[in-house]
Image 1 (cartoon, rainbow over the protein chains, first blue to last red):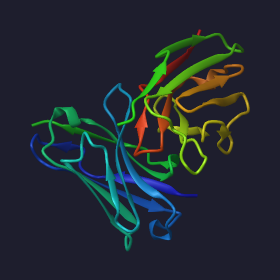
Image 2 (image 1 turned 135 degrees about the vertical axis):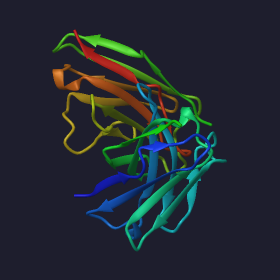
Image 3 (image 1 turned 90 degrees about the vertical axis):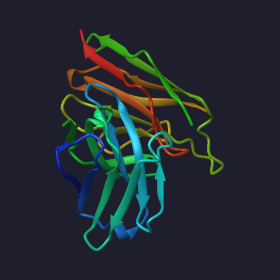
Length: 118
Length: 111
């Protein structure tokens, strides 16, 4: 059973960089065949895809966030990470990591709330 | 960018009655490999989203057969044949042919 767990600060100051890590258990990122995704949900709103990474390191980002987003992978730790720079209050959201197989997202983390506030 | 538009945005259904949600994409989701990359997810209150339907009409493992998906090209529909109390939540369609885009979500509640 694959499990994903997000971790990182729950509070980030405006203009700083939001950093989250997703730890995968029950399956290996380096086995291939999946994209490892970040998706967020603003409070009371819908889902917004942020981007994903393949185990090889290839990345794909939402064009609306591309200039501020970096997703990386550490196969030795079976983790992948999200960095979002120059955050504002509009980046306050629940951030989910997930496993994506051509759109078939079968495993999700529980989500972590990140609040941007001074 | 592909835009996904769902209707209605909310739905109140009597238990045992059917429900239907429409999803339209701004571009065809039919890939050259013959597959159509349209998915349906349900987010129950307080939970992470869960996959219901993949590639338009295939039910994911464990999904009850009262859920069905149909459509082609740019027009898609999710149907619940007989709504149960546990079906409450927000339903999202999502395209997977070019990056990923979710619909706005349709909130389903029980009357």
